[in-house]
Length: 110
Image (cartoon, rainbow, N blue to C red; front, side):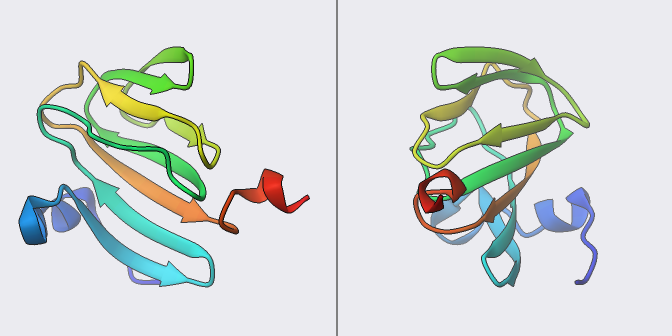
């Protein structure tokens, strides 16, 4: 897999239609993206399990009914189908996103 720095990935944003994410790599069920919302995070629940690694920025992460402070270097996991979003985040927020596993998440496969 080629390596990517946050600055290299951010240079590809905004994407078509003003999208604030860029797909960087795919292998099997793994999809790697960089996500950099600006102003508001409009995410809806995803159909696959998801891991975020915070590259830059700080704020609050909503994970279902829970809220967590986050900052650079933090890892956040969201199972498929769970409501989640970033709130009150700094303008430099950029997170690596890894989608993986089957539709419905790994918990649904067992």
